[in-house]
Image (cartoon, rainbow, N blue to C red; front, side, top):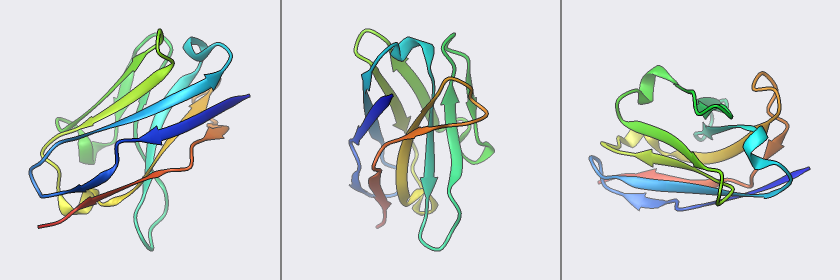
Length: 117
């Protein structure tokens, strides 16, 4: 069992940066694949970025070159650095964990990110 708590959301202007954090509690954080998803109003939840236990990372096309996912196993925390933010990045961002990255079983409560001028 893994509990996830996101933080770092807020309201920013287009072109700004924001860093989200997701603190995990439970066992063997380093064994889990971690990911960030997001859900905008009226839209389906979508994958943003993922990082495996070997630090290999993947990104959705719409964030490549702007967002960076990283993890600190000593702190049981995964991060999402978001740069050059756009209004379309506005969403609730969720952290997720899985032993099998094809099936994210554990989810945080989400943190709101709003990009607006």
